[in-house]
Amino acid sequence: MKLKGRVAVVTGGGRDIGRAVCVKLAKEGAKVVVNYFDSESDKEITMAEIKAVGGEAISVYGDVTKREDINNMVAKTKAAFGEKIHILVNVAGGLFARKTIEELDEDFYDLVMNVNFKGTVFVTQAFKPLMGKGASIVNFASQAGRDGGGPGSALYASSKGAVMTLTRNWAKEFGPQGIRINAVCPGMIATKFHDDFTKDQVRANVANSTPLRREGSAEEVADLVVYLAGDEASFITGNNVDINGGLAFS
Image (cartoon, rainbow, N blue to C red; front, side):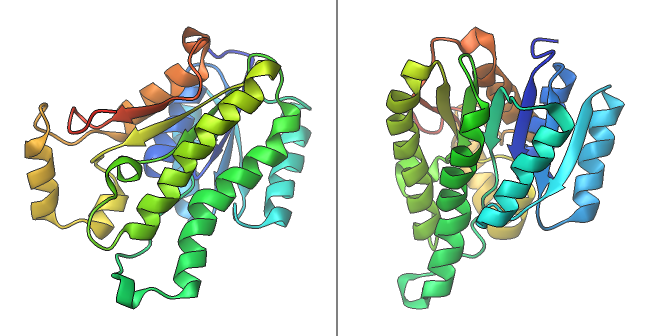
C-alpha cells in the first residue's frame, strides 16, 4: 500500500493501459478518479476491477480537449476527495487513423494534436493548483516520439514528441515547487490500440526484433507509472522513460 492516503487522477482510464494504471494505483492504496470518454461499458469494467482489489474510486466522463469538461473533472474530484491531489496521469490519447501526407486535413490534424497534446497541457494546468510538494505527474509519450513512428503516423508521433519536450520543460518549472513530472514512452504493448491500427505480421516482426522477443503488457506499463508516481522515484523528474523490451534506447 505504497500510495495509501493519496488521490490520483487518470485520464483515459476506461481501458487498456489507462485501466491497468487505475487498478494498480488503487491496489497500492490511492483513491482514484477514473476519467473516460468513449465507452461507458469499458469504464464499468475498470470500476469493477478497482473494487475487486479493494480500491476506492469515482468515474468522471470528460473530453480532455474541452475546458468545460476538464473543469467538471476538477470539480468532481474536489467533491469526492477534497482539495488536494497527489498524482496525475495523462493517459488519454490516440492515433485514430494512419494517413499519408496527401490524406491529411485540418480536422484530422486538430483531432490528433488536441487529444494527445492539448489535453495533456490543459488537464495539467487545471489540476496543478491542487498539487503540492511531493506530488507527481506522469505523462504518456511513445516510442514513436523518439523514432518518428510507423507509416501514416506522422501527426501522432509529432504530438508525442511534443509531450516529451513539454515534460522536460515543466520539470524545470515545477521542480522548485516540489512537483515531479516524467513521461513514459511505451513501445509495442498488447492493447486495443495495436489491434486496431497495426497489422498482425508487423506486430510479430516488431516483437521478434526486441531483445526480449515479445510485446509488453498494459500491466507492465502500469508498474512503471506507479513507480514514477511514488516516493521511490523521489529524485527522478524530467525523464522520458522507455518501456519497449529493449527495441530502442534513449
